[in-house]
Length: 220
Image (tube, rainbow, N blue to C red; front, side, top):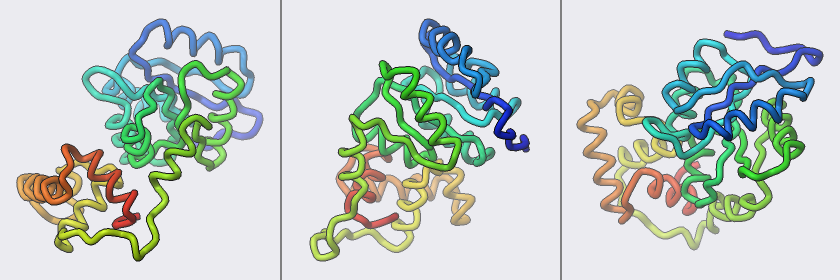
């Protein structure tokens, strides 16, 4: 595990971004900053995970929409094996489901592309000192989504106790094989539970199930 940098040492940062011009622009914008040091740039999620494991930076600037492995899945993998690495999503995606999915995957910040370099540095500082940074443009809608409804207004659901266990792990960002390891179930059995959960909640995918569970206060 990498050692925590002292206050006088710059923070090692890894950029994960599929747009080559954006990678170059971020690298050049951050290079003059004495408090950070860009140690590399990856072109997709798989490369980003591999570089994070090899170099163990203090923070990863992660795009969301990328080929092969997207930023949300890449963040899950990094956080699963290297939870001390901070991850700030740096993206143009502002859909509520994507924002909540990113935060549920373990991201420590969500910054919108087009923001100033000073704001990005603020997000980096907040994330690396233990806080969570949310872009002001999305903070209100995210907090509204994550705030549980009053207890008497939470609708009943017909999920079994086991399905609720699976749903909780979905919210925490675990994959089907990882859920199976946690609950001592086969991957096929987990898939059956996930399908049943989506049918009962009338949603189309795992992200929608996680957002609904958080919004209704069924899991925390």
